[in-house]
Image 1 (cartoon, one colour):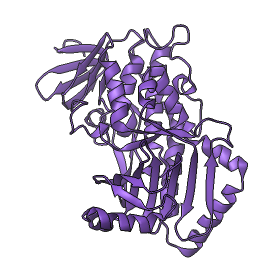
Image 2 (tube, helix red, strand yellow; image 1 turned 90 degrees about the horizontal axis):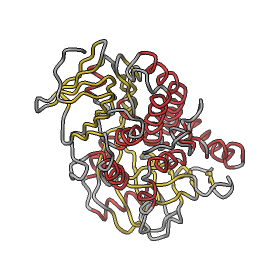
Image 3 (cartoon, helix red, strand yellow; image 1 turned 90 degrees about the vertical axis):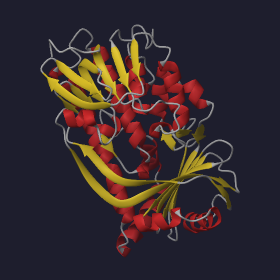
Image 4 (cartoon, one colour; image 1 turned 120 degrees about the vertical axis):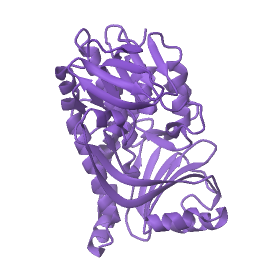
Length: 414
């Protein structure tokens, strides 16, 4: 893209400063590359969709990534460890419990609010030298030629980058500009998101409850509260969302049951339609695609963010291992895409399969689900495998997710 006038000229432009994009920017900050991070909404703005009060289940691999980025200590102060995962189906026999102590690990994972993670990431980003932060700034067009990517901002400014990273969500302009399409499979479901105060202490147990109305996740968070993700059919979600607190809690109690005692208080509720969205590729000329721009998944298994963070950690490692080469070259991008393929396809397939299995109302399938949970609970091998699920199904983990520095000879950050 020689001869193109640009306001910013950099090695890597990351479009999207949400949790995945911000993590990538921080990971790359010690490599000596010139980085520009573009985010449409200021992190502290109440309208910032990536850093709201939704809760996210973090794998131990994601915790290690955050440790390597130097932000875990701050996040941990407001995160809750998951000591057990309890899986059951309302009104059916069979349940299963995965216990961290039985697996010989301190925790199966952690639960943190998105706003807590976003605040920690951006606080550190603002102290990194050699990183240009453009926020608020909106990319309106992305075009590519043999030498680079040209990103045009709404205010008329232009960024020229040897590598553009699409971290701008499921409706990614950067992915679209690179000519990469995406397939979308609607589940016909809506997720209601809220926080509740139970009458019984959660004791760091994460519940996955499959009710007739749809699966309900209750994740342990600070102050004895639980973060709720309640999956419903759209018409039912509209009806329940319109209820006042008392009738809403009554319907939730009926669906979830009494394992947490009486649910006593509920926060403001939010609704999100659910679909499987999968980019046709994770790389294109001069473009890498990560996080929700690469895949958007159902929250049933809590794998979406962990998968996206592994995208970022893998891309960071590929760029670290190819320092001195053109970061947007076809060879570098092919290495990233090949590494991510098996893990990505396996996690997407597993999650989609769970949705379809637990959405079926066919009687033999419902019976098999209960029997399967019972057999799972009796199998230490199956539990051990499930406890390692969020580390990835296939292929080697990136160094950051294994608790190793991005650059083994000199650590991660300068």
